[in-house]
Length: 161
Figure (tube, rainbow, N blue to C red):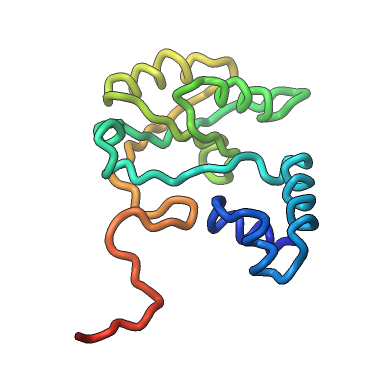
């Protein structure tokens, strides 16, 4: 059934009937498996990858990657602090990472000042946060496997006129 998951990861618009035809399976079985994947939390959400450079409202947004050095809590480790952070609406992603920092936070704001304010007024003062390092994203090239800039080379042969 990983085939269904892989097909949906590449194109979430595929219908169970299309997936069934591609895998030569019954659509009822595919529909049931998709429902099971959703119920088990394996499929968390269906989404669209947007190229912010091509959306006027998103083009001017400031994106930042914030690395946080934190002290894990006795009972919950990093989870409780990560949960407090991901509840902020500005936060797009939170990862527990290895290396010099513990958590990586990806967020979006309207201006550099707004992002800086968020880091200094919301993230840095949280109990357990020992330090932050902010990296502003200058350009996205690829996200979740989708190439956002440049031309992706087609796998089709070119037809000469």
